[in-house]
Length: 439
Image 1 (cartoon, one colour):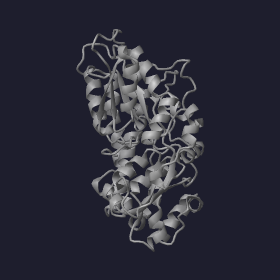
Image 2 (tube, one colour):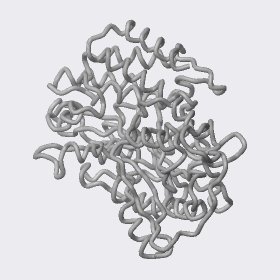
Image 3 (cartoon, helix red, strand yellow):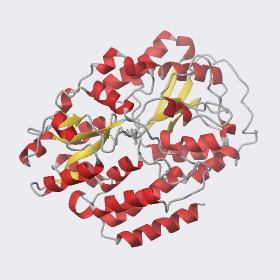
Image 4 (cartoon, one colour):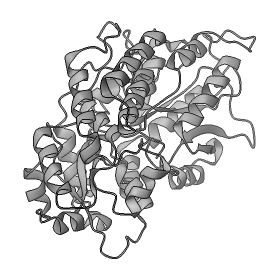
């Protein structure tokens, strides 16, 4: 959805897979201890039928693509009307959610959760309804459902989308630099990260543009192929491992030559889409909305975006959100019913067609509507087939412990400092110190 995430245009962006940069530990505390309510947060609210004129409430962030679907639901289910509140950014909604959880009141019936944040719920499930049932068993891609499942089998979130990654690129800038523009030829040139960076060095030697949108973007993409980037399976924090340091050293090593030196999601990053600032971007399905929004629709004369069916190093997933139901809801069964409907394959396909958020449903991945989908904005790229192929290529899903989101934020800040001129070793030392303070 992220995009995302992030949030999704950042619409500011449509991205719902964006980094969650707040304090996970603070929200985990909010999940387990009520600071302002009198009721026991681990007990379910007394269940009630919706009163006349009352609506089931859902809060989302960015762009989940739910407007038309909710209107359809309300027309077909006048007895179970749904009202959506949309918050622009995940970080803003996360902060508000934390406040509501601590007060143990004011929560909507359905809560949208950014994917990287699910570990906080799984680590402290007392506040959330178990959504598991035979009707939805096996509905989602395995790595999506596993991320929302507790050790005793409770399913705390219905996955709304996934984020298989490809590479989006400016075919016009490739042509000006004398590089191939055909998407199959482009894909063949960047099957490994070594090839991707080498092609970037060739590109910048012939162009005034940089190779990619942001160092943080590429770092995130590479981390999505590391099984234990920050925490081990027992949640032990380990940021001085060889794989994480290799990602850091590689990305910061190219900061000066290949990166525009901007932070992803910043105003300067957005401007890069409009001033020929860069040629490639790691591209989960939801990123296409960000590209379209930030570049302009229709695209400026001569600007040609395309999508290559490749992701350096194999496959990777970035983003994808969930719907969860707080136990504070007095309408849990109705909330569960609606959440199951709006995350069903048919609805996910409709959202993909309109907004680009890639389905997380196994059945949806085989739908001809998805497989035959093309995107005119991206040079008529067969995006349905491309992102289905990219989903099939995912073999590693990074372990997300309770501190994943916080550590990821610190890691991105460390890379941004190098982009802005700080010594890489000094910035790394700061990162390690900051992570120690989180524990």
